[in-house]
Structure formats: C-alpha cells, structure tokens
Amino acid sequence: MGNAESQLEVPGGGSEGYHVLKVQDNSPGSKAGLESFFDFIIAVNGVRMSEDNEYLKTVSSQNIDKPIKLSVYSAKDHTVRDVSLTPSNTWGGMGLLGVSIRFCSFEGASENVWHVLDVHPNSPAAQAGLRGGSDYIVAADSLLDDRDDLYALIEKFNMKPLRLYVYNAEDDRCRDVTITPNDAWGGDGSLGCGIGYGYLHRIPRRDPAQRKVDPIPTPALKTGTDGFAEVPLVAPIQTPTLNAAVPVVPAVVPTPAPLSAPTEQATTKPAAAVAPTPVASSSLEQQQAEIRAQQEALRQEQERLRAARQALEASSPQQAVPVLTQSLQDMSMPGVPTPDVPAASPAPTPVQAAQTDPPATLTQVPLTPASAQ
Image (tube, rainbow, N blue to C red; front, side):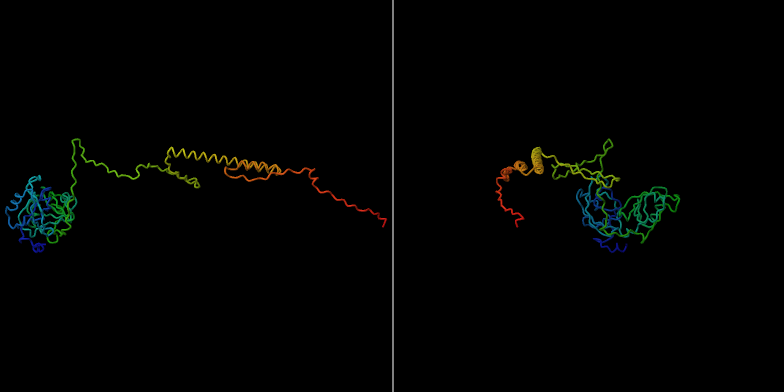
C-alpha cells in the first residue's frame, strides 16, 4: 500500500495535508461527504496545502454560506476527489466546517491500523461490540503513529473506559467504540481479542464506485404533552370506478350436496334480476293475459271437436254431418273461409223405391203333360 500511495500523482506534489480526524453529525463537513480518519484535505480552491498555515481557516471565514472547493485524498480508496463545502455558523455545532483536522503526511496512513481477530465470549471486546475479522482500529483519542502505541494506550487505560475509532470493512462505516480494558476479566489479555498488525492486516482496498451512501433519514415525529406522536394524516386516494350507477347484485352461494346422498347435485340459483320499471311490468301482464285467453279459446275448440268426433262415432252419417258442420263453423277464425259441406239428401221411402223399380216381365211357358209325348 505504501508503494501505491507513493505512486499516486497528487496535484501540486508532496504528501502532506490536513488529516480529517472527526466529522460532526449534520455539519457542513458531513454534508460534503468528508470521512473521518481516511480523508486528507490537500487543496482549497486550487491552492495546495503543503504546510500548516491559516489559509483554510481564512478562506472558510470569508465564504460563510458560500461554497468552497476542496481537493481530498482518500487513504482508503487511494484516490483524489473534489468536494464542495459551504461553511456555516448557524448549523448548530462547533466551528464553521464541523470537522477536527491535523496537519500531517498521508504516506503510510493506511498502514497504522490494528485488525481485530477472534473475539472471546464475555470479554471486554465482546461487551464493547467488536466484530472479529471485519473490524479495524484506526484511531483513538490520542495519536497512534506506531505499532506499540495502541498496546501502551490499552495498558494505560486498564480498568478505565477507552474510546477507540473502529472501521468495519463489511459495512464500510466508522464508529466510536468505548471499551474498558481489564486484565482480570477471566481470559487472556486485557481486551479478550486477538489483534493483528502489518501488511497482511491492512484494510482491503475498495472500488470508489462501491462507496456506500447513507440512506435518507426519516423525519422524527413530534411528541405532544399527552405522550402521543403527531403523524401527518393522508386521505386515501379514491380511484373513480366505471359504471358507478349499476347496482351490485350479490351472487347466491350454492349449498353443497350432503355426502350421504351422492345422487343429489347442488344447483346454483341465478343471481337476482333487477326489478323492471312499472311501464314494462304493465305491458308484460297484458301480453300474458292475451296468451291465456288464446289458450282458453283453443281448449274450448278442442272440446267441441272431441264432442263432434264422439257424435260421429255414435250415430249415422246423416246425423253426424250437422254436428260436424256446426263445429267447423265455430272453429273458423276471422278471415278464414269455411269449407262447403254438401247437404244430406233424404232417405227414400219404401213406396218411392217401389215406384222407381222397373215393371217385371212375365214369360208364359206352355205346360205340356209328360204323357203327351
């Protein structure tokens, strides 16, 4: 990593800058995206910060509420980026930028890190929330410029709370950790965790494109004096429906057939129909009355025809013709001609029959006695 840092071309040359040690929450430096421990301010408005002077402080005080351009070197990504920062004296914290800085060299900045290895249960490290394998101790309240500086600090703060600045490679975030070293906690060491240092225990390089962005914070709810939180009420959006005037007809749910009678089948009743208007109902009743009258007339004609057939079967043809004629006339519909039935001729009397017969011819045969031959 040291070779990578020395090969990096820094605008204006050199390897010095203002090391960002702490960034306060919601400060101008936090809004500009400055990252504690890893960032070094190397130029301000194009002017290279090659020595410790008052230039940054002067430019900040002269540009309150005005953006200034900072060139920042990242010891984690080994890149240089430009950020826009707006000094403010009304943001609610200390300083115009809200950051703590120290002028130093950034060569070897990523080398002085202590890798947290295995964490023993119930140890001071476990109680402080250190995560083995992914946590790296990068700073403390005092300077850590050498390998033994951390060990000396731990010895100094035995049985006392010690504040450490820890970076997690999985979350790509830094956090404050308060730990109380205790050499009598019941296990090995004062922290109860393994610590690695050197080339194999440095922070892994990360692609700058994978830099994580903090999510948009959720606005805090205002709590009233009665203990209830004030939440904005939003009226539900009503989507207009088509055919809003059509009434909804509830469907009839069919009743399933009992298991004991497999031959029975459940029938589904049709949905209830919409009641017709009064005008349509009156017209329908009138048509039904006419149909019933026609059916009654047809039934009466069938009765007359049946009576005529019975009379025909029970009497002679001369007596059945008048009855059949009358039945046909009764069954005739308007506009339909009635078939002509020939009148029955009267039966001849015995006297007339005798008169009409031709006279008989008598042939006289001579009677000759047999003996005369």
